[in-house]
Length: 435
Image (cartoon, rainbow, N blue to C red; front, top):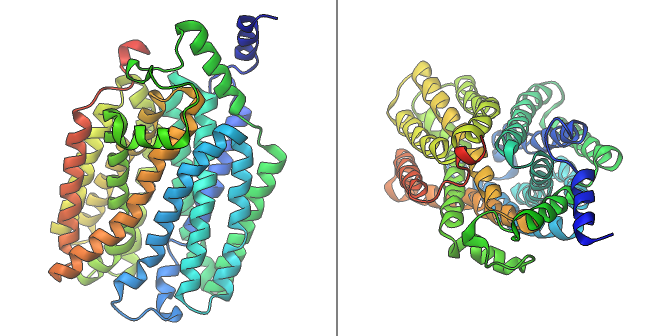
């Protein structure tokens, strides 16, 4: 059989589209929901336990160290997960992610001090870097170019719904069984179910990316979607992809900084929002409603915003999202009262929903299938390193000025600049080419 016939056979064996691959797409959706549940176990209950683990009052640098360690490790593992996924397969890396998650509940259960929690978050970074990266890469493989934004939107929606569900569930379970046993029981159940589902039900999606690669070569004589990438080899080294996405290519570079900027904003919400709102008179219950509204609206809205960018292009929703997010951050700093803060949280959630899945979709748009996993891994490296950058930068800003609100103004400024930067680069998904 000729090479052209082999390519046609591969393309026919692995057709793309969400509906065409609904069973496997749904399995990946279940997986990302469990991945969201895993990180959600640590976003609600653990900060309230910090005093019991030896964190002194007002020691915000030590407190945020667990966010810093998570961001550094998850960022690095995103990068390596992309390379491993392209070379060894998505499913194997997903399995490694769940194996890394198994010790986390035990570290929390037996933790003698806060360093154990920091260590647990190192493993959480491994779990999230491997597992979440592979679910999104697999769903992009299955969906194809016409539904890429929708695929990313579904992935991020279910992941962050999982985060919210876990935060609420562990809070109730902690009241019933105590925090350590609640987090242990919930966490070990999630890790085991995720691992079992991967072993029994998840199928390898790398052949879909390889079939798409063969089709592109046959149709256009090039592996690259954009002319600016056609001088790149079919199988570049991981470090070459890192340099290209991080520094050399203007569109990739803009998208990478945008990823870091939005995670700086999320670090603000995770670490400093509760402290700030408490100093302004909000009760713990009100703080829970405010941060919960932000996460829930962010998660659910991505079902709409990902599909929107498939129709109108990536840049309009991304740029609008950054500026809405900046408006919500600034509004929170100025507002007073639960209703006003809830309104600001809603604005921030919509802003995040507009930019978050579409940054990923934009990276996928211009990444050749042969090294799409590596390109997404580099983008996600910079994006999640934003947690570490945010924990350090915003903590220093608050300590230097003696006012937490200065971190809000700094974040809003960074978001405005980030949106302007992305507005200056190419549209990766021109709607007239995908009508």
